[in-house]
Image (tube, rainbow, N blue to C red; front, side, top):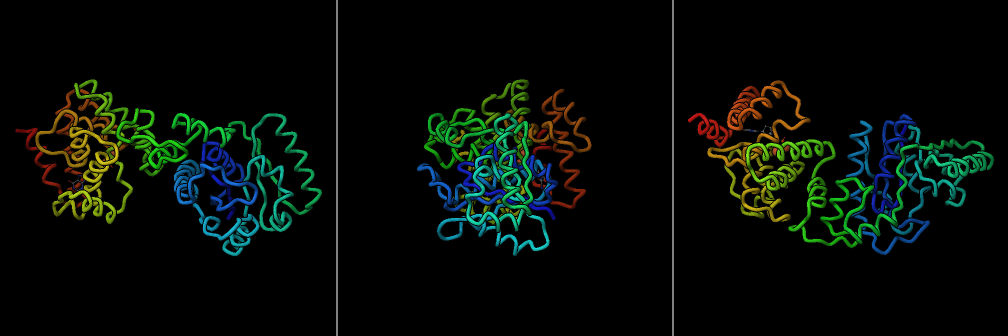
Length: 398
Ligand code: DGI
Ligand code: FE
Ligand code: FE
């Protein structure tokens, strides 16, 4: 197996890291990629705003999930360097990896600066005996020239080295220093993956402390996305888009629809155990079916989390609460969220087109069809139908 190893301080991880890792994975034909956030890096002191290792680790995990979605290979995050005492050297990390992956081919991924100073690292010769190195930089000529010179120099000095340099036309050249400055000035930086941007805001990293209950949309959106696994992000953005259009069409409050859509699945990735702990914490009463079905629980826990962290109002709280089962006598906002979730553009199941047509023809006709389709599907799988779903159908028919 060909494995890429990408270490760095990731302070914070950004689109430059992500696009380079994804491009390197494709060009090298990697089957596995391991991100390794550094503990204390040997080559520089950490910038003074550097969040502690646990925050950097959490952000790298978000980036790794996105990299896995984009490359469709196994992407993991190693904590070896964070857990190591004292200064962290790549050679030590590689010795560990060599032991773990004895019959695999390792490739160390690195950016321009690292590559150009490689001969000054601890034990470069030993590193090159354990792995190939793959350096990437932008396509501008100065970099390419420097790359060529360095490649030749290293090839001469370490004749058995495997060295590949990639000039990636679409690699985003990002200065972490600049990015941190933007964050502390505006709370927002382009070149950040939205989930990472949201994580930074929620944790108040890099001087971004802000009132989560008063976030403008450009901050609320990433903050909401930061709860999600990368693969669910397109679904939630699709739900936002559809909820806004439905609210406009059927006269619900557009901003409430948007906020409800952005937050509706915010607890979806939590385990059953964590969901139940949230219910306990917030005193949410559950019926028997909810108690044993994580898929039903996430609507309830999502609503409390949205209220507690972001201060959503009662209408939005209710819309999130009922987005999975529906209930008798739903408000327009509640219907809008239920249906936006069901028909947003990434949804692709048999009957979705028919449902979309019904929803745009008449909201209640669409709702009745959606609820009925859910009941049929649940029955087909032998699941218990929640009484609120049946109640919703009855109230529409009656
Ligand atoms: O969270 P999403 O996947 O975007 O969508 P959702 O909140 O509508 O959740 C759909 C899941 O919930 C789906 O896997 C089926 C399940 N579900 C919906 N209604 C019922 C239900 N499960 C049971 N057991 N009973 C229901 O009435
Ligand atoms: Fe949901
Ligand atoms: Fe959803």
